[in-house]
Image (cartoon, rainbow, N blue to C red; front, side):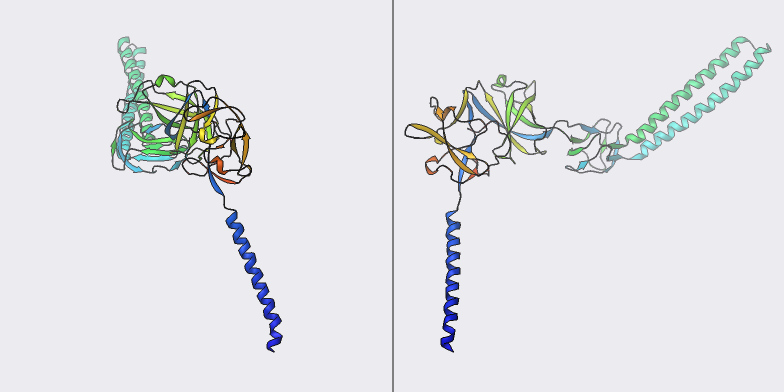
Length: 376
């Protein structure tokens, strides 16, 4: 019986050994397939200075919302960061004073109408008497003038009643458009004046980047100047924009000039409050340049490694170089502004090697979509 079991045991041992061998091979493949990270940058314009400024994504239109009348805030209906629709109620004033004003206007109108009715009767009575020559013409004209004054008074009171009715509607603050509440300045129970800011609304639509530019060298920044914008959530990806607004005077405390940068493409995925970096090229550009550490040479021919975004591999790309500077080298031929090149460690790479693209801050690099201005 033991002899009859030997073939089965041998077969089972062979299967187990084969499974272990396959598993070992699989583990060896996983180890060999480790992908090394590589820092990529984009070519920068040469001949000029690339300056970077931090900013924050803001809405193009940010109206400050306020009640058109004063009063005590009875209810606050929205919170900061809440999305609102057009005509949605945001806050309400206490209706007690508004209702009293409305009642007073109604009472004044009723009194004016009674006076007008009495003046009309007097005028009609004097009209009959003057036709019979029982009163003088001047007495009739006086009664006629009293009636006209009473009619004018009624017209005035009706207008004031309409104003009081409008004020009753003004006790409810409504959103003028769709958007997000970006700031709140009052609380329930607070007394506010007419025109006092209650909320700031960031309306839906265009987004911009708010930055502060230094007082020194402010003459280098011009309205309409093209810039590159990188969002913190899209590292390595540059969006084209332009300097849309520049304050005419510096802030008295920070001594900086407030500025707004508009995106050239309205479809940029920029959300309110996101951090951004804005790149300005100061001076004339004479082409492209890359860091010295990105360039290598073989048999006298210079080359760089360019990222293939589809396969996450590097491609050895010949380039023609200009005169070297302290940190950068101009690239006269072989690269475009949209390329991503390995910034350092090129001696460890080979053509077609798969890599993990990262930026200088060790963040995964998003290389989808168009790029504009690179990092130094």
